[in-house]
Length: 449
Image (cartoon, rainbow, N blue to C red; front, side, top):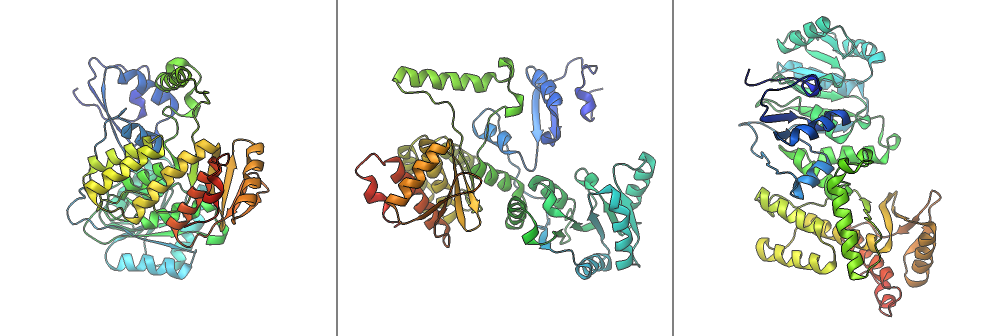
């Protein structure tokens, strides 16, 4: 046998290969820690190719850092159309219309209801809405032969509506299925919703995705952000852009992940970088404070558009340079290079640069996180003493309203009508605070222009 296609079972210790040369992994993020430990052992002597429509930030960060090589397939299949995506409340009339519209044009429908205990009740509701439709249920707790029978009937076009769990998330390619309705979409992760949406629109027929939520005021802030991102990035090949946007806003995290630390052998590369950084700072006479990785969670468009830097490799290099910048001078040099090579920055790129500048100031001022809190910005510091110092300084040195947050940190009332103005105001405030022992600080803190 030259090629073996299998599941996680191939990674177990009792499976051996005479001369394994290439390992191809689809959907790497689905593999558990034990499987990844096995992969680490294999990677020493085996070439590994991993595939993902939406790589997680840590994996993407490793690719941008040069630890992994990255290739991007940007060309969609011929005549493929982007899936039109809508967010709506649970409206039986809208659900009926969406199902009938698809059936009337000869198509099929996925209705995702990820709760096995109530999935048959939901199927009964769908039957009452569209009694003329053929409806079946599919979930992972069904007997293997029964599930296989249902799925084959759906593939053959004998079923109009498949009420199912996330069992359909990957591996299905049914050209006739061009409408998907996802109930309680707020409970799914961004990558998972992207994968589910990808089950439709796999031909030259226009496909539709309806994301049902209980009401915007009833879902969490993070869920609203995920849904908004899915609406904003709906064009073909947007999975990579979703992942890149996620990386730039949240940061890449640690290379090996916090849950996999403990033994030197398991964190070798990361520990090596930390030791090198510590030794360099000590040789320079600086105080070593360890790695400080601030987090920014703002719902703003911050990325390098394809139209600005069309070449994928050059765009990834640009991302890498900006994320690696350690001071304002390096960022200024990157800006100059971009303007010389690609022209004036679009608004999304300006936001990206502003976030990079703010992240530098967060490290300098020991700010752990900046996030939205309704119409305010909430800043969380490394210690309560630093929060008190910042609050007192803002009150005395700026015209920005500043209060303590009941759950910790401080909140700032900054004009948020225009994104770039908001970021520039925040950057100048943090810059002035970092210079508070300088005579220039007072002059910088007064305005926002």
